[in-house]
Amino acid sequence: MRVMIMHKTDPHWESGAAPTPELVSRVGGLIGELSRARILQSAEGLRASSQGARVIVKDGVATVRRGPFTGENELPARFSILRAASLQEAVAWAKRQAHVLGDGEVDIRPVTEPWDIGLAPAPPEGTPRRYMVLRKATPASEAGTPPSARERAEITRLIKETSTAGVHLVSERLGPSRRGRRYKNTVDGLVVTDGPFAESKELIGGYVIIRVESWDDADRWARRYLDIVEASEVDVHELESRL
Image (cartoon, rainbow, N blue to C red; front, side, top):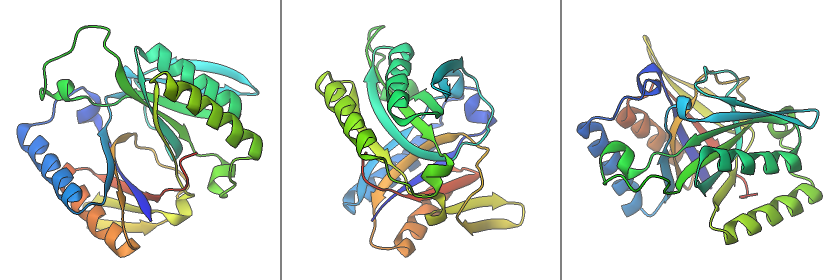
């Protein structure tokens, strides 16, 4: 099975702070270990919400809000990674997706690129960068209701069109939170809670997607991930199909 291990951000990272060389080294070491074990699917960090936007669709009408944001109900249901020339272009893609999937809320934020943390020279201004378009959970997604045949067909067309244009890179659909697990550092030590989760108030700060044989394997890697990224909270979700 494939699982997404995601850590939550905090005021320190929301302020735009840069990771220390030690943290970059530790995370790089974990990524290398996952790669050598041949279980790593992908891994990304996200920029502060002040650099992002949200699309809220209600009764078919889309409203766009610019960041920064405080955590509300941040439980994720699905996401795509895009390569776009601007936040506005990523928002336009999110609106097209929402037209297919209906009412809901979508968080759009830049993915951390090597030049953001000093690992590569900054490219020329206007160079396309990656964005995460993350759709929040709804009662239907939490019930495990799959996309309808119409939704699947239209999302497939959108992905095919924008993949050909070099915009769409990948999409993933998360299983209901009842099939997930939460790890939280507290004053009394690590607390592990099985889903379902009513909500998550913390914004996602980054993630890895790995292929594991069992939840015991996922648990082992989640604990290591939590320790290495020094997060207060980590969620683990099982992934469904990519649509």
